[in-house]
View 1 (cartoon, rainbow, N blue to C red):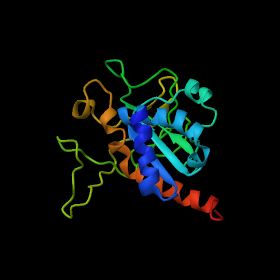
View 2: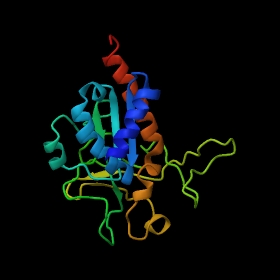
View 3: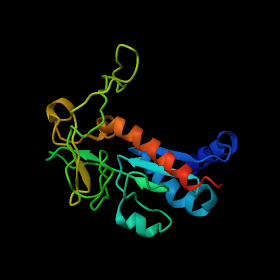
Length: 209
């Protein structure tokens, strides 16, 4: 935990210039973010006030974690700020235990940004990205990230504490049905728009500061 704290403090001192910021992690990076949010932000409320959002994806955020850290709150909509956003993506049924999820994890739907269990269809998805073998995004003829539409739906399953994607073929992505490396890729253009919306809201709320 001291490494990430040191790295974050270096960023604040040398690059941040007192501006608001977004934290984005995945998998092991999200485990590190959970530590930064629980310990550092508790001790540094002035820094925490400048956090627009923390995308802590590919790890579970549990009610126990939030209870232990009453200064933190989980997102409930698309433009709330100072919040944690989290989900883990799985097929409707998985063949093995998901190593990154914990029972009771809280998930938000990365298409509708709601925590209820209503299905968001693949048509509602603003766009996914395909990954090359090297796990880099597939680009279009103009060198931009290619937008793939109609690929992935999303439904929060509260009992499993995950987001279920039912529209991709598990054989193409992961035979076991754990879509961990596609947590961002399936919902990439939704996340991009969501971050922009939260930034806009943060500045609307803090225009006097």
